[in-house]
Image (cartoon, rainbow, N blue to C red; front, side, top):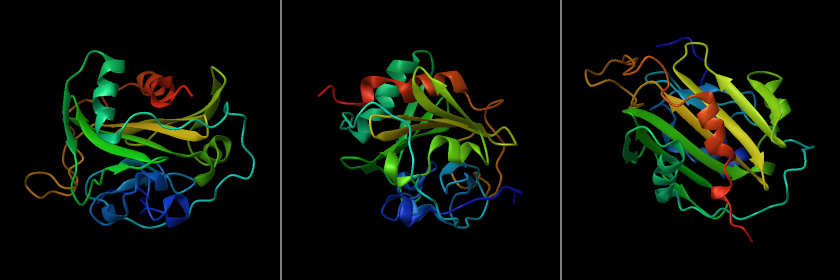
Length: 222
């Protein structure tokens, strides 16, 4: 067991989903199976194998920055990993992680998919901006909120260095990318609750995560 504070999906954030990033991760089924580092708004930011899940509700923001007008999401959840690979370039794309612990969400305004990159888990989430706390509200408790290329951008890294992520507010949505240092399988092959990392740290850098989350490929042009 680690000393990380973790959480379960918050129904108030996304119709009963939780996000490794927020409710939008639609991972209510993950409770108890995978551990998430808690974010100030109830977002599930990072999963670290073997920790227990507890719930802390999210509080949607009442005031938000201009994010350029709402646009519909244009990439199907199953196509996200290949799209990410195209944006990142170097690296090894692995399979989508999909089972009771890692549900794939593919709805009009909600996309969640977990997949392997360089042998480690990666999470992509796109969710309605109005369903979660704003960038500055979240950064008040953890992470840093900066205005990057005109977009509110939340950057965070867990204290143990096992996961890091970026969320970008744009076009009525929040697009988040998380990189972990292991396969995020809940338990190691030998049943250990905190299996060792397979890399020296999350393989996707914060700058790369930001670049992917901020890309316009996720949105329809009209």
